[in-house]
Structures are given as structure tokens and as C-alpha cells.
Image (cartoon, rainbow, N blue to C red):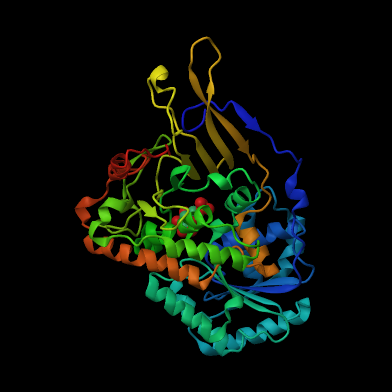
Length: 517
Ligand code: BG6
């Protein structure tokens, strides 16, 4: 049974045996990857495991190395042991003793106080020394996996030490999210970057763009001719974009308390999904053609009416509840969360894209933590047939067609439609055409992101005007919500539920219903 409680009757297999095999990227050229924040969580859980797996898959060049940089005093050997433990834990089926022995010689470590200008001179010297051993041709990627407060000093000191220059090879800088806290801080971060780096050197991360299923939105829409003619207000009633998580804030409450779901998920991931769903066909598959079209969507989003915000935006925070047979704590009971916190862990919003294609079609966006299931999808609800000739015979309303792009888990595409149930009476049965990727994925989002950055491919990264546009839309909303937030209004949904009642009510007011989480 599917989430929506129906048996899929028709399913489609992939027509090619292993399409990924013929779509593999070439290994990029030599390079030095310098990771700031090397003693942190992201480096050990995502970045180094991603590099290790790429190496195992033979997707990295012969000449490359990783230089970890952080405040902690560590030797190269200590850093290697620290990484070995986490790669082993993260990739139990990929890690091998022999593989690690070959790999670890590529890992180096340099302690650095991010705010100390002279330390960057020492970093430069160390980098040049190691480059001497690995023939990386002056190609450098600086990956900032550090807290946002460290971005500005790191960027300024890197350029101050001459490390932003592109003398021989290339120099790229990868900035993790969050990219700013609001419009002003994101502009200021862009201005800081522009002092030393050119826009072509800047790679702003959004790991959702690296998910195969998210990239598939473009292929699905623009490599098939049968869907695009229907992709507009004439045929589409509304669109629902959902990113639901069953996890809570885990150990990240220190960051999350200051961020909340709008900054954490909407300004980036959810708005990127909206743009890919709503954008016009780009003239080519070049990164800038696509990024131009995405920005046009952001610019067409109707600004929120701040005086009547509650009609279009519902926020929530999880309380204690049962999930998968266990009792989960309320958000306010998580470590590092204040007892009267008003930080939203859930948001549902109604967005209008005011352009020719989408006039009058609402996009309902929602995301939250500690919901019933982990599930991310884009569901396009089509209009009912213009003339309901079966109504009198069947009594009930006929369910509209819904096309669902399933982003995770159970990645695939699904379309439901009506068929006649065999028999002498006129009865309709909804059936589903279902395409599932099953386990076809070979690359994780971080692996893909790193490879693309190494190859200088910008499609998966967000351009300056894209970040400005999404902050421009959401900053006033976040500010207004924060001004109005009252501790007594939270928690307003139980862990393990579908979210707050007010989100349900928002849909009921529009005579629509959410898909089940
Ligand atoms: C991150 C957010 O960007 O995305 C997290 O900071 C969230 O709060 C995560 O859990 C979700 O990513 P994924 O790939 O697990 O859906």
C-alpha cells in the first residue's frame, strides 16, 4: 500500500539496465581540498566519508590531497586516526583496512585560529609544501564547513594572505548553508566574498540540489514532451511541496534555536524545489541559463501580506509525542533549548507565483521536524475534468489526477488516474502508475557536490541573486513571525503527528487537503 492508502496496480521498470553506468562523470583533474572546520561534525560525518567513497569508486584524480584546518591542536597522524574512526562508522560496507592505508597518506592537518591574520600566512606555506608532494597544479578548493560567525574572518584572511588568487590553476570557495541569517547579513556576506573572490570562484551549497531526484525534476519536465503542455494554470489546480522529517533537532539545537525551520529549510531547500517546479524551460542546460530561470520564479513570488500573515503562513513547534513506538521529547526539552522557546520547527505556507503560467495556482509548501514519517515530495494536483458526466452515476466526486515526484525515501515518480472497474456496473477505480528508482543511486549528495565543485560545474550551487531573492521574500516574514511569537502558543503539534491543526485548517479554508505524511 502507498501512503495514500491505495494499491499501486501498474508499475514501470527502468528500460535501461543501469543508466547510471553510462552517466558517470570523468574524474576531475588534480586538486587540493582545504577543509575549514576539520574537527567538526560535518567534516567527519559527510565530507571525509564522501571523499573516501569517491576514491573507492575511482572518481578522484591520481594527484589530490585533503588539508584539514581547525582550531584544535592536532598532528597529521591524530587527524588521520580521528577520520578513520568516523569513516569506518559512516561507511561500514565500504571501509577496508587496506583501502584506508592507501587513502590516509592524502590527509593532512593544520591548526589555525580563524581570526588570526598571521595564521593564514602559515597556512599558505604549509599548503605550498604539501602541493610540492602531490603535483596539484595550483588548483585549490577551500571548503568552509565552519559556523557562520567564522565565514567573514576566514574569507577576509584568505584573501589577505593572497589565497584567493588564481595564479596557476584555480581557486574556489565552497560556503555551507546557512548563507546569512537574513537579507542584510546575506548581502554583507556576499560583499565580503566579493572583496577577494570573483563570483565564478564562489560555490554556495544547497545539498538538495545534489539529490538525484531533485535533478530529475528538470529531466522529467524538459526531456519529455507530454507533461510540459499540462504544467500550467489551465490544467494544474495546485501544487504541494513537502519535506517532512521524523528526526528532531538532534545535537544541533545551539544552531537551530537561532535558525528555526524557515531559515533552515525554506530559504534554501524548499524554495529551490519551488523554483525547479515552477520555472520556465531554460534555453540550455548551462548552469546560468537554469539559474536565470530560477531567479525569475523567486522574483514572481507574490510578496506576503504581513498584515494577514496567518492566512498564508502557519508555524509550529513539536511537543512530546509517540513516534515509531517510542516517546519522543518536546523540542523545549531537547539539550540547549530554552524552556519557553518560540523557535518554529514546522511551517506550512501558501505561495503564489504571479506570472502567466501560474496565475491563480497556489503552491503549498511545508516542512517540519518530528513528523510522522520522513518524506519529501512534490505533488502536482491536476484540475477536475471540465464536465463531470459520471457524477450522477457514481454519487461521489472523482479524485483528481495527482502526479507525485518522490524525492526521498522510495525515490520515484507516480501518477494516479481513473479506470473502469471490470464488471457490468459503472464503477471507477483509482490506479497508480509508479516508477521507482529502487536502489539505483550511486552517489550521495555530498559526493556529488564535491565532484561538481572539483569539475567547476556550477549547476548545483546557488548564485548570489538567487540567495538575495529568497532572503528578500522570507526575511520580512521571519521578522514579523518573531515579533508576534508568544511562548504560550507552543508546542502546537505532537511528535509523530502530521503537524499543527492550523495547517490543516489553512487547507480546509481553500477546500483542499494535504497529502498524508
Ligand atoms: C539540512 C538542515 O540542511 O537539511 C537539517 O539543516 C535537515 O535541519 C537536513 O535535517 C535535511 O536534509 P536531508 O538530506 O536529510 O533531507
